[in-house]
Image 1 (cartoon, one colour):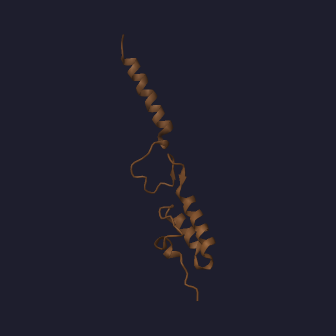
Image 2 (cartoon, one colour):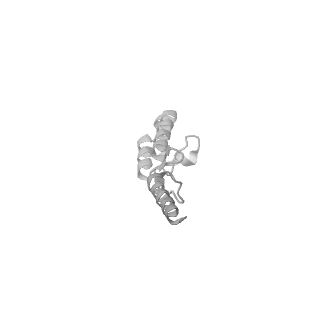
Length: 96
């Protein structure tokens, strides 16, 4: 029996699967990626939600719009944490 057709068929099936499910495979260096397909995490959405949470917690002390604009500009790479002063320092106001 000739194994060439079986090998060829296997290669074609694997290639089609990779083309179809290629976005679901984890990638090395997902830097700049908006959505983690394996974890189902949208980094921009998480960033925006955290900006809203910080604005709710800190009120006028927090620049929510500036935070949201940075989420969009940097594609959710720097997610603010309301309890981490270093991550929200650029968005804090000093009220007089």
